[in-house]
Amino acid sequence: MKHRVVVGLSGGVDSAVAAYLLKRQGHEVVGLFMKNWEDDDDDEYCSTRQDFLDAAAVADVIGIDLEAVNFAAEYKDRVFAEFLREYSAGRTPNPDVLCNAEIKFKAFLDHALRLGAERIATGHYARVRETPRGYELLRGVDAAKDQSYFLHRLNQAQLARTLFPVGHLRKTEVRAIAREIGLPNAAKRDSTGICFIGERPFREFLNRYLPLAPGPIKNERGETIGEHVGLAFYTIGQRKGIGVGGTKGGSGEPWFVARKDMASNTLWVVQGHDHPWLLADALRADEAAWVSGAPPAEGTRLTAKTRYRQADAACTVVRVEGEAFELAFDEPQWAVTPGQSAVLYQGEVSLGGGMIASSSASRLHRSPAAARGAS
Image (cartoon, rainbow, N blue to C red):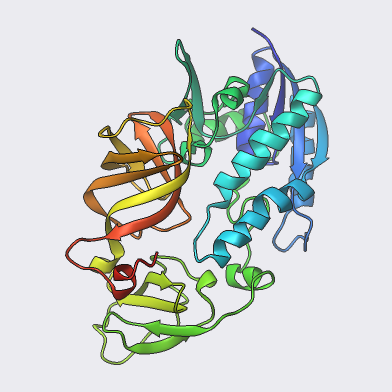
């Protein structure tokens, strides 16, 4: 069937090729450029102007109309405010997960439907499969670019309206198509940094919105070896920027953030990438969202990702209670971080997931903070 499809054109090559493929398939395609950040919107960090020009050039080559829409207020209320709340609570949120759930597949979808769209499309590397039981969210074919992790909160109503035209392609194939049809952004590098905000010195940026709250940095022996600037500015597994390099009496290995004790405002650090304090056997997640609408049964064997750039880890669902669930891993996982997403997979199918609330340190080695129940 041919549809009226509104494509989110970001100015990048993936969404550009997505729009081209839909147009070639005979759909009525309209491009929509979203502006979602206005604070300090300048060319140094946030390339909104250039991205819009790139999107307009793409629309011209493909031969589709382009509309610009401003979702800055929605982004600030639904995504950025939550982003700051999570950091203030000592967790490390994933802005792409929040952004997809609240902007790209909610505000954008609602706006597209008002424009008369029957479907929306984006340049995400993921796939949707319709089955007799409903819609399934599948990994993208290109394992190195798969973005199903960021999309795990999508529901049946959203998936029914969504197309991922490049999900069956590899990135090299997408760039080859862009070159073949003469897209001006064929060689444009992929965007990184905070969703819609761009690349910038993160601590400096966060300090504009969150106050500094210094406190002690302690090692595994409970010795104070430095001072942190505020727990919000650190994340589990962080190596750079801790400020305790060269501390006397250490092993000489790099320091890593292992725990954040909010009650005492203490940052616990350890030396060595494979230190036991950095390993977790299990986790608890809340705010769960399931693509099918129902959670997996307790005892189900699955795989999970606790961060985007990690290999799947074999696990068992040990408990499901309301919007919370608990996982036990076959092998200890490194730097499981509260605030990040735990996303569950059954083969190539993303079942959904939730926000990591806490993890259990390796059973043989618990830090003082973990023993007191700190995240």
